[in-house]
Length: 570
Image (tube, rainbow, N blue to C red; front, side, top):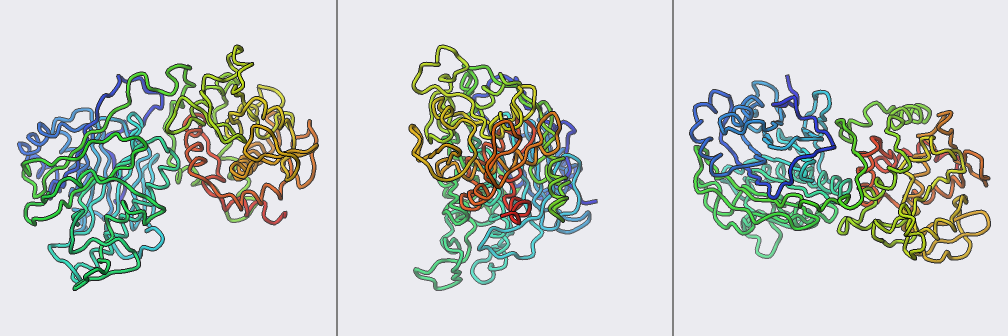
């Protein structure tokens, strides 16, 4: 049976972790060479034990295994007791391509474990197996390779492990098919890195494994997806863009740093040259040391490559001074799994099934909202500051009006109900009143000037904003906020549809009045959604809300559903 397998049932992670502070995390990647069965691993126990003594890994990424049984055996002979194991099964049992499986062996619990497979079929409950698809501009070709993705919440890290197609010592035209396979898989990795960095902009991301092409191979490495030269190239672009896809901005501007760049000699001794085992990182703050390689192969034909990452610094939590809102104590499905039950066949079915998914959420107290917004709207590079809606500026978290002594501060902030609470949920006990998908930090004076007005265009400029306008019956946000505001309103209309005491909210094409459970103007909001697309900031905020409240804004994840639901009304 083909499935994503796990070595431990304890892959579930509680989001409220209270472990000791972690000063440093050691990460290693190693092609272990044909560790196909537990018996073969046991026969090399002394080599694996010696490798463990040298590497001392907190997270080990292995390639060229055939099963999760082999990965578990590696963990055991390396004496990594208590480590979590996740691995892939890209190929059917007995298939000769089974040796292309990869695994993660981690001291820390793993979350969002996903197998990106060229031929997905099944997955275990709570995990995801998805179709491997290349990024735009990269050819889709037949392959048996994919990659394994997992998040390590305890150290704010996501990891991808690859074992790309071997060149078998060939170059030029004889390596062309292999290069296209390498490019396809690594472009899918790049696409996932871009998406993940948008959802959690504060997390580091690491991509590691056997690339089967050196990072400085002058006979192969190109930087242009539209050109491939195989021989006598001179100044022409060469044919293998594998490394450039991660590092040269070819996929949505992605530029990862290769920690192996300083290693100039081979990690595959049989073929001298540039290292083919690589570690790329995307780091919001510089957290990784340059990589090093082992002096021995430990019974493999590859050297191991390793790095260290700074762990979370004690006392540096964005909540260290303010008292954190508690996180959900349950495992959350991956984004793809979250929407698995949504039926998009008709607008009515989409509306109904989408409501059922996003209505399953945690209700915060109004006091918890302060701490939640301090997390969801924190500036990535200044986590002790929150970003203010409509003002396009940030202020210290501790300037909140939660502290009565801050009321007279010119930079005090409070909680803006983007869907005004007087439009359908005036009581604090109603779920919409404390739903942080539409609650944002706001300058206290700007919040007052916005009031409970509908959204429309026109009016006079609002002081202390970056271009907001208002008149007697409407408020127009700055361009930078229009798309996000629209998607919040669409979320509210579906989340609180037919919810009785929680509010039955509607979007109106005309003017509304306070006291009615509706907000306008629908067609203006639709235009803003279409003109101002989803930003990385929105994606990141959506992910942070998911961790606290347990539900997502589907129109951030799937913008096309807006048109399916409301496009015909305008």
